[in-house]
Length: 143
Image 1 (spheres, rainbow, N blue to C red):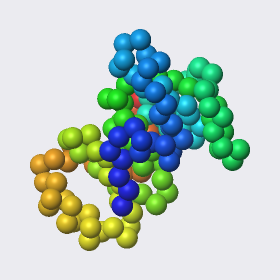
Image 2 (image 1 turned 120 degrees about the vertical axis):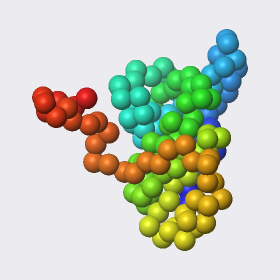
Image 3 (image 1 turned 30 degrees about the vertical axis):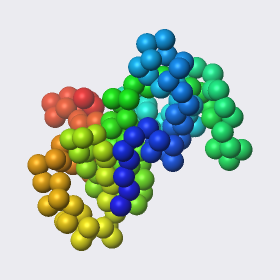
Image 4 (image 1 turned 90 degrees about the vertical axis):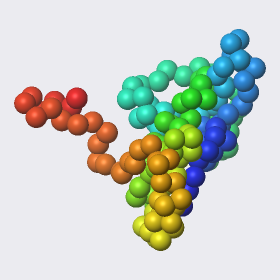
């Protein structure tokens, strides 16, 4: 089982929270991203990002490629797609409090115990799909 509760949990997926002092509104957090982190955010928003210059270099194996300001409210949405990119995760739960939990095939017993524990607090359940877009039945175009 994997769980993301806050911005710190996005680090393993290439989204590195730096500071809130960069935003004059003190609302968004400055984050450096790796290529993987950028792809996850683009998938979440279904758009291509143009990033600002990165502040830190990251590691040689996984360098930071740019930065952006992220509101804290984006964390649960991005966390869902972080876990959906993980090949070990077969089911993702978005909880009403904003935490996101991902389960692998070996987590069936734990998942059932947690389903009872979180009854009424599971906001949505996601499964990995080959595409994030549905196809319009009349035109065959992605919606």
